[in-house]
Image (tube, rainbow, N blue to C red):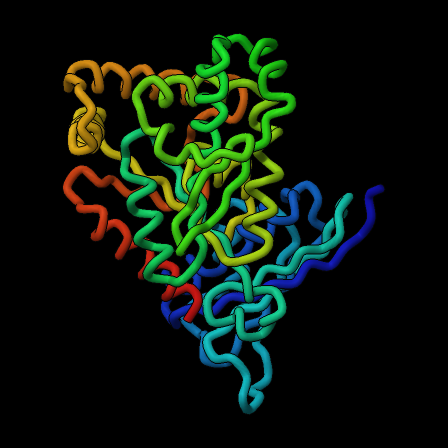
Length: 337
């Protein structure tokens, strides 16, 4: 039922034209997205700014960004102990949902009840190094890492083991209806449990990789795993890596990144990883698998691989996994400061 709601938000910004503009637009975009609204739903928007933000008007910033709604901006009175360099907003809108406030950067201190748990979505194509980077980020930030691809690999393995074509949606659903896949952590290391057995060491072969890509296109499979992923993300601060984390699994994640690299670089990394484990593979076969999986993942009808509109894209062709992790960690820690 549609109702009139007032949605509050705040963000801190540097006192410069670009600083205020970027902060105001980011705040409003995140608030719109988290609340599932557009300009068509909005009745009016009121911005207030602390007296130390004088370089630009946040209302003018969002107007220039293309928002065609009633806007107002005014200065707040000086209050001892208040957050400095702060832009606040109240959006009055018609919505079917309850208001979800958004507090970013230093403004998180205003609503600590909302910000004790946060999620990082890391998406990208196969072989971009997402898992390695995600593990490093989790270690640096001391948060939980969830390798969502491992869940799909486990179900792909189940299909292969049972002789089911992973591209046959009906057969896959029948095979996996009673399958039980969960995540457990042993000494901080993620283990994938399939029907009571730890299959972590069996899901990294090229065959399982292709099976995972196939089953991930089956709507039943994605729905089966969606709840598991969201439950973990709601209970503690996490980083999840996959193909559709920022677009489908956690569209309201506080931080989103899209990690990519050329197909050649990704194939070389995957080849090195597999040969280091003693697997006999050829680079040409690995490259073909990468290209095929890119096509499958980006063209599937359900939750295709794509960058979330508000995700930061990182090309890792010339970066090590540690350097990419540092970029992400710096972005997150700066935002949480």
